[in-house]
Image (cartoon, rainbow, N blue to C red; front, side, top):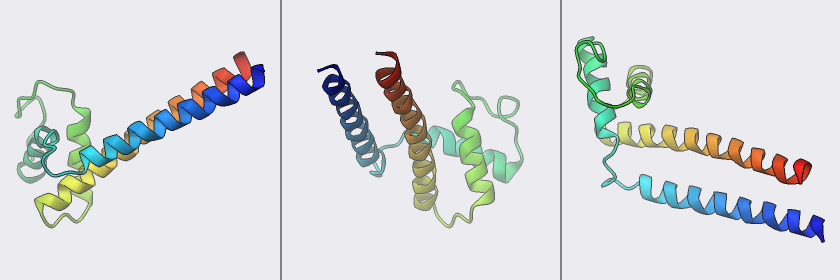
Length: 115
């Protein structure tokens, strides 16, 4: 009975994980989702004008997404804004999927080995 409960919990966590990842991917790849403009504009200023974040550009949020956008703009061949937004969103989706997958593996470890 305990083994069946463990398997049920693992399947439930797995389904919840993929449900939320699918919903996040579905929502974040639509064009009206405009959260990353706060990251793209400072990164563009850093790329084109050689400005420094927090020295020349004021920003009241964490610097991580700005540097992600900076490296995407600097090292990938971006032709237009739509392509930049898609690359930016896909990178963030892959990063969050990786972290959620690590969390899922942690939950699997807890269920299998500690209970």
